[in-house]
Amino acid sequence: MDAPHDPHRRSFLDTPAESDFPIQNLPYGVFRPAPGAAPRVGVAIGDWILDLAELEARGLFAGPVLRGRSVFQVPGLNAFMALGAAAWRFAGQRHDQWVAAG
Image (cartoon, rainbow, N blue to C red; front, side):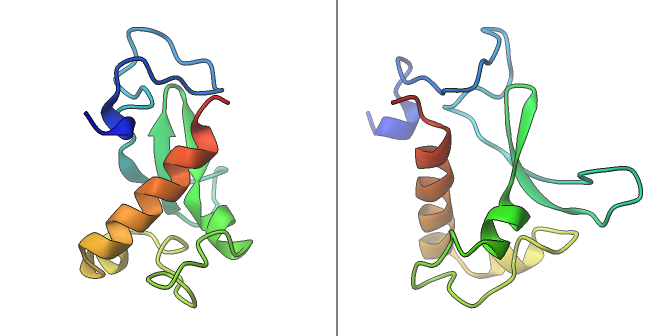
């Protein structure tokens, strides 16, 4: 079994056992960080949202497939999805590392 799907894996964030979004299931979505703010891309974990647009703005997605791109600071997933599996894998590995315990 690969690490992201390991049922014993835990996040440093407190996520309820009955959550639809434990560390093994981190779905992408579009959200507003505040009322009236521009929508952007994030990842749900438990009752939290990891703001991928903010992390992208800070240069934390600087790998070769995402370097110089602004795919999370837009109100949709189309630009990110159009990049293909290498970008999805890289982004997933990055945000998985950031929310993992230990």
